Length: 467
Ligand SMILES: Cc1ncc(COP(=O)(O)O)c(C=O)c1O
Image (cartoon, rainbow, N blue to C red):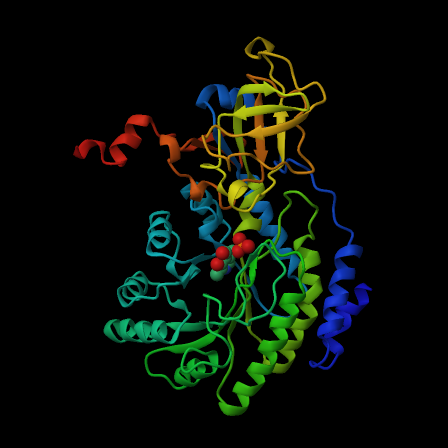
């Protein structure tokens, strides 16, 4: 069956939807999905020592894993016939120490707000390694973006493109302008960013001016903006890759049409967004398995439309498995069938556990000092792992890989693969403070990279000094 997927690019571009879908179902069944380890850290982490020193909850980031994920993602696209660039989507985790690690890898940064730009500038990332993709697309925003030295901007609406042109005119800069398209393909993923009438990007055709055809027309021979290429982002945690194949086919047809209309039309950069999945509950395809399923299709785009730089964006894959959250069991309750285990963290630190019912793999950490422990462990009863918040959503779904054996008061519970879309959502619900973050650096040292915040600091941040 794998051969079906790889031969799709030999088929006519019409009437192959069914084959793509059937192939994908079989692909997912047949792919030899790697057995995932609950812990991806290169070396053991001294959890008890760190938790004792910094207190809990505590995030720990492994820098080695960050760099390894960059290498893995880059290697996955080695068979693409052209130049491949990786972009880290800062929205997944803006911790300055994480940004600084990725700057060392020389990768690009996908940013979406002036705040993210500020963080990157403070970390001394070069502006030529940034691509700006905004949802708001205001004039002043683009003015500041261009002023900062960024030259690659993705526009997502006709009025956004007009604002960029105005800023470009005022600063006498001609930015490389990409159009964010919404290919309107079905995406079978929890987080889907491409659907009919969707918020992101413009459709290829339809509407009046907010479509890619109109925007390309305005960008051809434009005095203020230089047409650079296309961007789309289909969604996050994608494990069914047929949506990419559908999107590439739609882009192929569209680019053929544009070339007929505008002989000078060429695409220099083709940015296929994020979506590379990570392990939470079920095994997922590796980046190589993902890339292999559609690289032939991408190579065909190169054959038909000429060489372009392929930009792979990733937030989740690059950071998720680099981080764990350590919490402490602070209370338990025993019912006939199950044990309620209460930890000192909650969804204020792991929002996706409540929002998406994300099953972060959890594990009880046995303590070196059993005198800190109280009570009995769950005696084979099923464990309900809950957080410290007075809120019904504050219950942690468990991964198939979770192992809470021996959970009792005083022991620690590690939540793995929490590096993406968690720290960035930290919120002070119930006057909870942001915990510290420690990074295990490449030379094996533990370095405090974010201080925990005190109740007094939170009080002041919330206006306590203004009363
Ligand atoms: C435009 C864009 N690119 C890339 C990403 C990163 O996606 P992921 O974290 O699934 O890699 C996102 C996430 O929302 C996005 O909006």
